[in-house]
Amino acid sequence: MYSTVSGSEKNSKIYCPTIDLYNWTAPLEWFKNCQALQGSRYKVHKSFLVIDNVMTDDAGDYTCKFIHNENGANYSVTATRSFTVKDEQGFSLFPIIRAPAHNETKEVEIGESTNLTCSACFGKGAQFLAAVLWQLNGKKITDFGEPRIQQEEGQNQSFSNGLACVNMVLRIADVKEEDLLLRYDCLALNLQGLRRHTVRLSRKNPSKECF
Image (cartoon, rainbow, N blue to C red; front, side, top):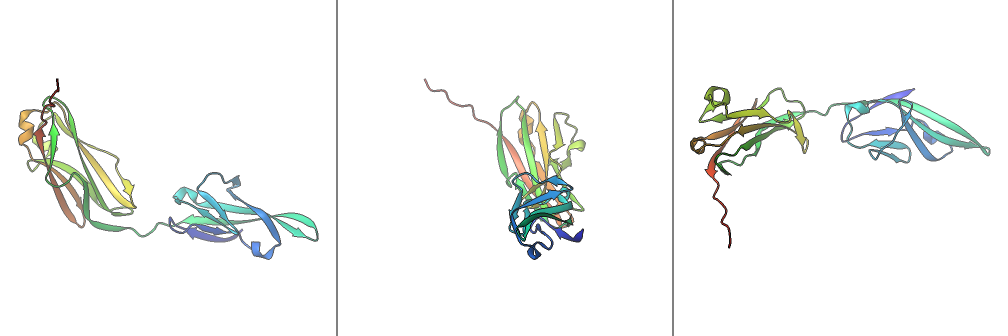
């Protein structure tokens, strides 16, 4: 086995060892852990392999196979090297709230249910601290004491443009008049600081029917 190479999301080339020493002809085939590579993520460029959107599962032993011609005879040649995936250096940002917009007003219908989503991004890579939550009139949802209003964590951690993001959904069942008087605060917190966006509810105007 030849020397180990490492790659990341932005750099995932695996060169076929010693191929330039041979009088080789296409095609150049690639295998991972003895299994032929399949799928559009794998692209063969002359003497190397490129893997799109590299993940930790892509680590393993990669073998290239080609035909060497010598004195009119063809010989099958293989070469194997290990590939490891390294994590790119992460970083932390002051929280960026994607939703809701600050001082947003959401129209609701009395007696119906509605959802408010607090979505924030905190940087790139694994985050030591990244939290989003809802408050009602400055109080935690659990301290407010209204069983109709509950918060539920959405996708724990998603990635948008390489950023680590967290979502929290506030579910309000059977909207009542008094809910329109409350202040709904979306809070995003990490080691960089705290950001807050406020939402208010308003009664949705009934649609006018045309005759």
